[in-house]
Length: 168
Image 1 (cartoon, rainbow, N blue to C red):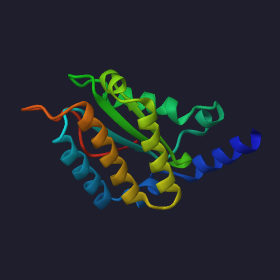
Image 2: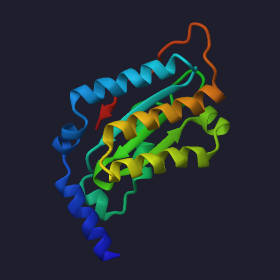
Image 3: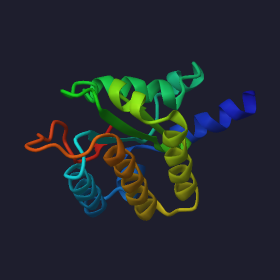
Image 4: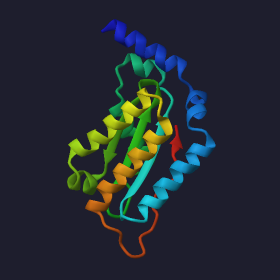
């Protein structure tokens, strides 16, 4: 256990914002933003992506999990604040190569947790394999397919959340 915590600590110390920006450069962020916007035109839900390089070392030592941080980011980014309660956050904790999805009430009720977990596992596997761009775009497309099934497009639907990924 101590060895695992030490390895995780090193990963969080070594991964900083520049690490994320090398992979998620402006061109890739623009492509991700476009994929989110295009997909949202086909359903009435909202998708937000947040990518965080690492946690403060004290949080790592306290055992803060990627899920804990994803829930906090969900609130801080106001993904919960959509009119239909169908916002979805795709959260990446880069130092851990961890992927979490947090769905608001309506989205969580409409889509089984196993389906969200499948998207997370596929994206995490893509990241482990170094396939950052295709993995991210594929995950966005999978999420959009789930949201299209649950929340078909509505006339005059507003874009309630930014499409540009948040780099935390």
